[in-house]
Length: 391
Image (cartoon, rainbow, N blue to C red; front, side, top):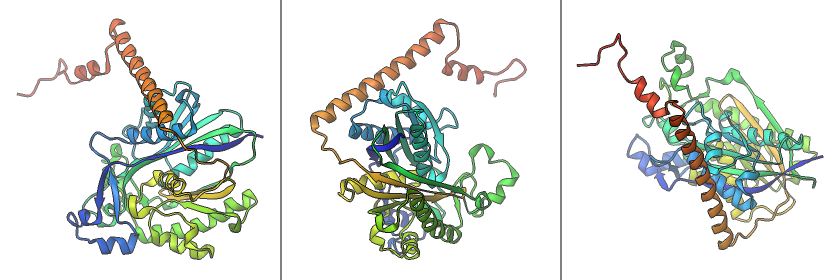
């Protein structure tokens, strides 16, 4: 039997910090109002030149450095995101190109805030069946770009960021022990983000309870009720499948939605809230990125030891929810400065190879008489014979 072990982890947060006081200057709210209801103090916001793909790349590069693995060794890249720049190419393909992961298949996965655990489950199955040896699972979001910054109910919650893990095939028992994936599409109107290219459809009003098209809509009370129910049920289900109980768990890393949800879930499970790792106060709700970002912080704080059993649990739009049980078999390595520089050099070389391939395709198209994308765009903007340019 093949096992999938987490051997690398990495996260990336944009430098710009948006505090509750900053938001209070934009909408009618206050630091106290936000914190008492969510537990959030601040969140990170991507700069204009940053994208979901670049955030994902930075997290992936760090995860590969920890795993001491070259991008060419990765055979599968899964990016869980609700905020891609394009429907296609996928964010995963953009990351594959940026990394120079020449042997990897790549695709995006859409399961909202549960997406990272969904991706972890799919990568685990691919490794267990022998399809791939090494996989990269990323959660990445630029939630700030799909918010209505006049809607106090949603703009206070979300932040940007990315987290990633590297899974490696092993004959040693451990790693991903079990996963549980669930959904309930009848709750699609509780939490949703309409697609931009559907914005003119009259049916959209059924899925926009706050009237804001193409930005996040949320029924907070129903989300709270849903989340507190499925956290406890999915955690217990995943543990049962792994042959474990709550007493065997060292740490639960939940989706970082807000502290009140976690407090209620802990009471339902009849365990101390200290068993849940929380960093929502510093990063906000980063959707699919929240679990891997929190995992990285837990490792940095020394919260995990070899042979610890940990649980990931996510919940979000769809409605979707998911949980996974992990046997933590690796010791966080001390990566020397020289090792980091060597890894950085490898990444730069990989990115250089990707640029050369792009230039090669472009020059091949020119020499072969095929129009480049820019040329096709200019041609599309030219007036047709039956059209007249504007005066």
